[in-house]
Length: 281
Image (cartoon, rainbow, N blue to C red):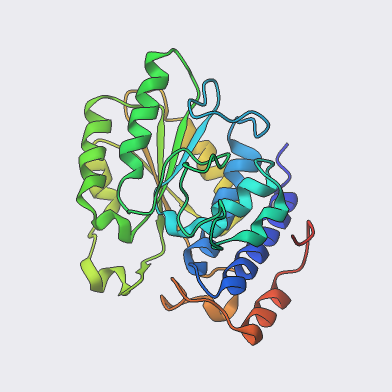
């Protein structure tokens, strides 16, 4: 039975990690990281079948996750560490020179949990399609998950990969879009409107599921619901409504915290809203 309260406590600690990491080096992307904390917590601590104690690039007989919007690396690192891929204490090295936890995740330093570099937006779905096809060829029944920003969908490579996924009937793939309506330059609709995203993904041959990405119970239900459509000849897309900066009041309802770090006073305010649940690094 899913322990929603426990997942919420983990997500709170993850949010606390995020603001501390970004503040520590006065660099990074807290907004999207905070908004997607519930989703990635649910995925790694409840949904995915994976083994943090045994990581290799193939991931045979394990569910795989590809972070396409790699700038939300503080979230990714926190969840990987908290779920056992590497020591939580390593979070203190975020964005420091010659460390493994750089601003955008890369696999070249052998960082457990990271299978692709995702600094350049738009590439994660292509990599996920390859991984999902490999699983089908190998008779591996586990699933492949991705996460993308809505602003990232302005990249043409996403739609090339989407066409490929549908044409090749890659039905062991669940694509999730962080649909917060904001990107670094402002509201997505003002920068370059995406139109009717549900209709677009459906037109590209996907089954589309919608969910609230900032209510843990709804996140778990939504991903479980998406799973029921796998194996039926079509890839699946989750349109996940979130609020950028969720959990920290002054970071919400604005795009300005997409890539800005809090000062000392702001950090204190944020941490006052995010109680310690698992222990700080």
